[in-house]
Each structure stands twice: as C-alpha cells, then as structure tokens.
Image (cartoon, rainbow, N blue to C red):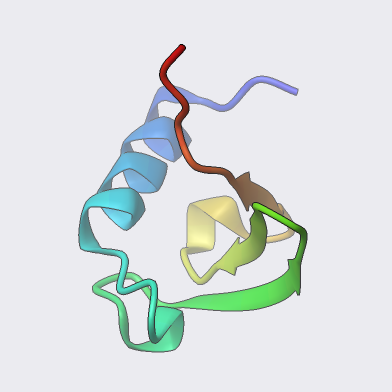
Length: 62
C-alpha cells in the first residue's frame, strides 16, 4: 500500500511530535497496538490515517 501525500505529511508530523513515553499525549495522539523486540505498532489518531497501523523501528547504522 502506498500512502497519499497528505497521509505522508501527517505521518511525518506525527513522528516530529511523538512522545515515546506517552504516545497518547503526543501532538498527534496515538494508541499502542503492540510491541516487538525492537518495534512498536501504533494506530495514529488522525482522520486521514484511520484504519491503518504503523510499525516504528529504530534506525541502525552499519
């Protein structure tokens, strides 16, 4: 699935304002759907992202 430009902008804004300690209190609130060993799956509370889940993983340098 490819996100629309509006959805991508909203996702970028979510990332910039994310409070990892309390995602529900972020600039754009989110609900944690689950955790992996190194990832977190979020539902972002934005109308244009409704019904989607996003996996957030750390960046690694090699």
